[in-house]
Amino acid sequence: MEEDRFFRLRLLRSHRVGPVTFHRLMSEHGSAQAALDALPEVARAAGVSNYTICPEDIVAKEIAAGRAVGASAAFIGEPDYPDALANIPDAPPMLWLRGETALMSKPMISVVGARNASAIGVRMTRALSRELAEAGFVVVSGLARGIDAAAHLASLQTGTVAVFAGGVDVVYPAENAQLGHDIAQKGLCVSEHPPGLTPMARHFPARNRIVSGLSRAVVVVEAAAKSGSLITARTALDQGRDVLAVPGHPFDTRASGCNLLIRDGAPLVRSAADVIDALGPTEAPRQNNLSLDTPVPAPKPKRSLRDTHALHLLILDRLSTAPVAEDQLIRDIDADAADITPALLDLEMEGRVSRQSGGLLSKP
Image (cartoon, rainbow, N blue to C red; front, side):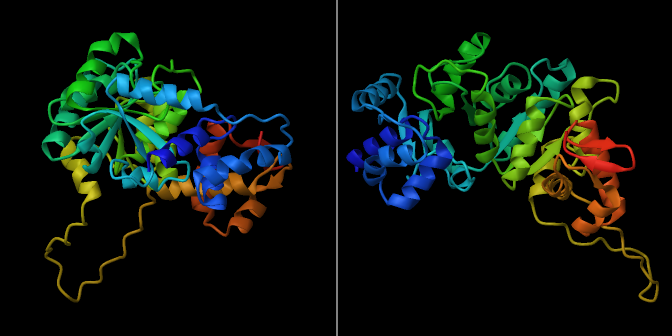
């Protein structure tokens, strides 16, 4: 068993083997040892000559470093590895866990938002996280300053999970050093990277997919229209998670992303009760005073945020750099023009679709 875990970690740390490649190699070859044996030939077929597998001593040093900081390894499929995360397409093959590993078996909700959070945003985050924790949820976030830190602090005594962008022993930003230490003692620190690794810019989007992947839902408290929190929300939707948002003042740019999410169908959050209601079963219809003979008009179904996100992806999938007429796009997608038009406007505002003369559309 330990030998197989060593081989899996060696495969994962080999050059050009990320989570998706790791899962593909394991599926094709059946075991980590067989995948390692085949890896040089796989690399040659991909045009990489003189390929070298990760040296054994590098893997041994990582395992020793993990033990030195009190962390344990959880590979996908093992008891400490959460089922929810295992089901995402690019699931981390292995996690370093430092703290209360039992938290991984409990239901989780992510609370994320702006680093330059407002005072009212921090206050809302604390109340929301405390209520979610009291309701039995583990609060997950990314240990950033602002909303993330407030979410961790409010749920520290009842259970919080911090996903690190670097090694599980490297707290970033430095101002959260004490908070990171406290979470390691009372909550759980999680990372897919080797201990001691300093986070780089490219690590943060990958970190965010774990934040959302662990959770049943993601609650965005404050987020600008173009922000990491909005990227996390899109990732959550891709993973099939619910996304909810706290509304903000229209003039506050820190709330613009949340307001856009709500406009596009995200449930509005005022307290933990709204989050729990959104996750739970639909309430039975209330009694009313209409007679049995009174015709009741069918309500127009409200488009959910997940529906809107799926429509955006469908539009982008049909477009290319070659211009196409908008009416042709609508016919190709076979959707209602009333739905396509606002979706196209959203994509234009985000710079993901270009509109040219003559009503032609294309990717930039």
